[in-house]
Image 1 (cartoon, rainbow, N blue to C red):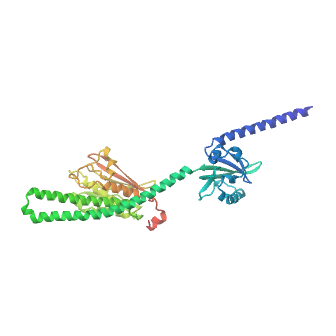
Image 2: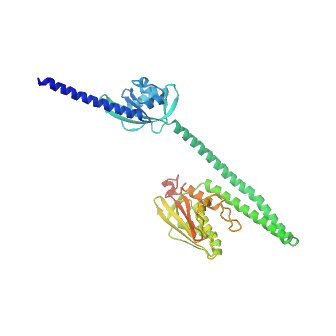
Image 3: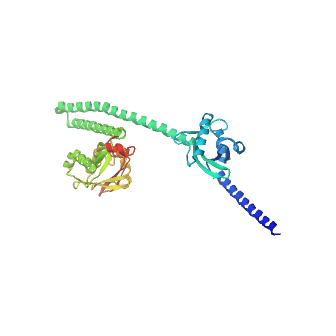
Length: 396
């Protein structure tokens, strides 16, 4: 009499297991349908077992049109034969990986139109055997953006090349008439000085001074152009040597101003020696130029290691900079003082920033009016776009 009871209990137990299984499948289906990417599950023979809502939207098929059909209907006709072989290879050695690594993959919609896709592959063992799971992403928008970025970069390269050529040609073409103007004005002053009154001589002086200032501006513009376009020769260099070269180049200004220019131990770095010497020269030269009138300038250069290279600091005890101007000064033609107070074109710091950007670094400043300034610049251990082997051999 107990046998029917045991049978009823067993049936109830199996019914409970089936209910839990169905509930689990229902929850799984909810998650699969909610995923923003396309999910398709394929059996060993290439038949589609599961295709979520995103796959239907992406390819333009209904669920009924997909389930039980060969995966090949989602692949352009010209790739179907190779796709069969790839599927066999995958089931022979299944693993989690990207499909078609290094190649552009293409999906085919129901209407025959094609679009770029990215597919991640995985697998699962079931009672029905092994199933392959594909996560499909429509990358049409990404490809469009990549194409646009490529086009813009090509335009920028072309524009920079043309700009560099224009700056070089213009600088030479403009300097020649400036030399002629300056020469004739000075000749005029020498020959007719005794026939000119003091006001006329002063006018000639103003004209010559303006021509000289224009020549300096053209040279600075050419330097700015070269800083952004000339080929950089990145190689291991001793920054102490670059500092010494810059200090030598500034010898006349240092002597005339009685400035003290010193440095702590400076490290070996990977940089373009000529460009980085110009950075030291521009920053130290500015520190000397914008010194206080009541005492000689003292400029000190130090460096400390950072998580990605070195941070250099150039500290002075000059006139300082107001906080509202700390970023502005790195712009081209940005001057905080008139040319009568301090000579220059307002291009030096723009050149400096461009050189440091070429190295993958940056520049910033901390300052207090009347107390001095500290310019910091960071040089990475490895300049962008230069691998270690090329830097070690001094090749760019």
